Length: 403
Image (cartoon, rainbow, N blue to C red; front, top):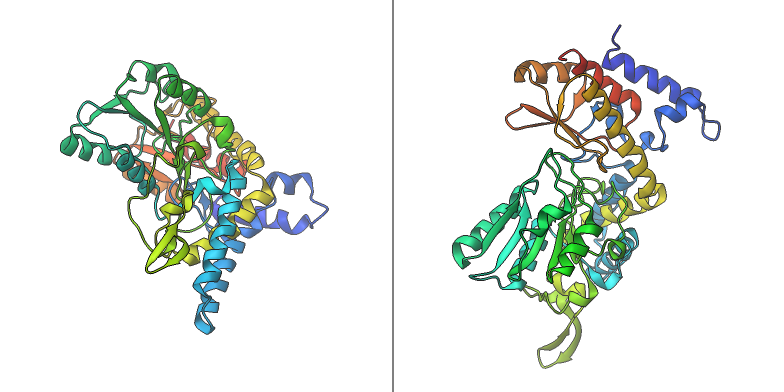
């Protein structure tokens, strides 16, 4: 007999009551492996498998933003205090990814970082950029414009079976390739590139590797020095568990001079020299030209504290394990899974092969939240740190009826 969403919530809530802090039973540990569900009210509302779209924030992040806004209703924080907090957040980000503080800037969106890089490269006729067919839409839009206005050639590496081998990039790279751009973890099917192997190939060919990291940062462990990537940008409203309007931008130290700022403003000032002259920042702060979305900065600071406390390696182990459980279950049911088996991410995309309206109705009735792709013919599920095996099985109960 199938368990309804209401019964499921009741059973897991009861387990949480039975297992007191410090004396967690095996059942409670299975229900909340990372000990975080109490920080995510969404678990009482839905089987939420949609963090690849927008992730719910844990309560400490909401509390930090609320405290910032409440302060603003009384005596607003000074700009100096908010800029100082920005520096604190920058150091936390550097710790998270193994970078130097001077290599991290805070932009507004993921797309902004790749636009800054493309402008810096001054691409023109005869130059080419290498991307792949699992990238996010913004990258295609950016380079399409450069192709139409500046004669840049776009080379798209095709995927095979939802994956792209590093060797597939090799035949597309030549002496006029200015940058290879990939989405570290594809928003389409969760395919995770081997950044280290790709960086080695790209550098051996004399060019640069840019990674859109929005679908990986916070879900997967990353050390930028070990990976060898040159640049990345990532939004913070997905796996970093924070809000909108902030995007970490990493530029490898040796390449900071290659990438000048593309606009200028008051936050560039490192020192006033008098007579309306200024010395500007020459590290990654040179990309932060104006006042940021500071409430989001404070929320991001709390989110980074949360992730660093839980440990991204622990989050990766848990969430990727849930994705593998889902992948195996869907495969056993006969569904066409677009995500490669054994993939290193917590995103799984599959074709359901049924009437779209019926599928959406069944998912809604089961109290499950996920994404529909390609006019509803594909489903993308993305378990997070607060999900558990029982919730994966709840989805498999639904998909099993379609097999």
